[in-house]
Image 1 (cartoon, rainbow, N blue to C red):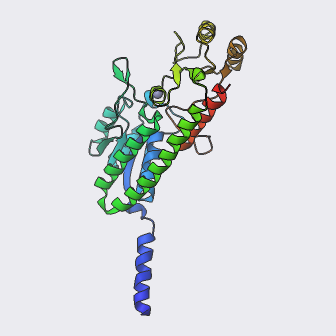
Image 2: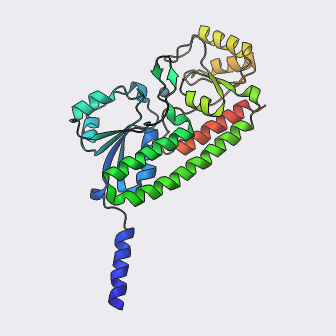
Image 3: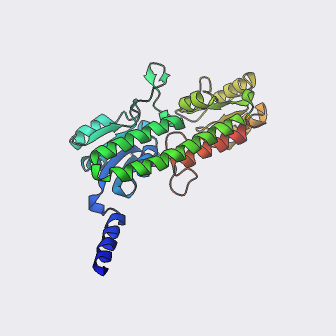
Amino acid sequence: MLRLCWLICLGLIALSAPARAQDRLNVVASFSILGDFVRNVGGDRVNVTTLVGPDSDAHVYVPAPADAKKVADAKLVFVNGLGFEGWLSRLLKSAGGKASVVTATSGIAPLKRGSDADPHAWQSVANARIYVVNIRDALVAAAPADADAFKSRASAYLADLDALEREVRAAIAAIPESRRKVISTHNAFGYFAAAYGVEFIAPLGVSTESEASARDIARIITQVRTARIPAVFLENITDPRLMGRIAAETGARVGGTLYSDSLTGEKGDSPTYIAMVRHNIKALTSALSP
Ligand SMILES: [Zn+2]
């Protein structure tokens, strides 16, 4: 009897012990938001390495030699696709091309931006669900022994995303319809706009690549007045005097930061996807409520 008990106990310990480091599946995620999704599904069964880390811009990323090694060591490489990682195919080639590439946006109907697809699909929480399902299926296929763990972690995270989606809808519903429009310099919220009915207006004729000029500011002021836009989010205007001028001359609120393409580090206010969406909702709500 005692011996049987021991066997059961040992069995339970073996079942509940976290996967040893060498048993974990090595995977790469191309940027921080995708890395967060993969960690949520993979848990301790997966080693996730993120190429474009927090607070960095995947659009203009230049892979380092160390990235080729990370890709070469990985069984799966998770990418956003939709033209987001223009630097990826060269990296895969220099890494030797053995890892399977998983496109996390598979099955998402892309929005068009001109003739190109808009890559920022994760800005709709409903799309984030599709990312998570694709990640789950790829992990299950790559490590079938851990299928149950991946499936149950994915279900728990999908339930969190459902709750998040309800939060977003409730927050937007509380903003009067006529006030649901902002000016934003980074054109990254097309999916958010389409899903939740907030209009994101790009400032006319203002370069989003460089610091705004005095002439840019004058244009923005005219546009905000004419279209009666209640709030502006201008990531690339770092001069507080210019921000102050826009606010003073238009009466619009100058919002804080909307995070679009990258998470913050652990100590920042958006270290996870869910924290990022909540942060953006709070920033929009406080800028747009009457
Ligand atoms: Zn972007």
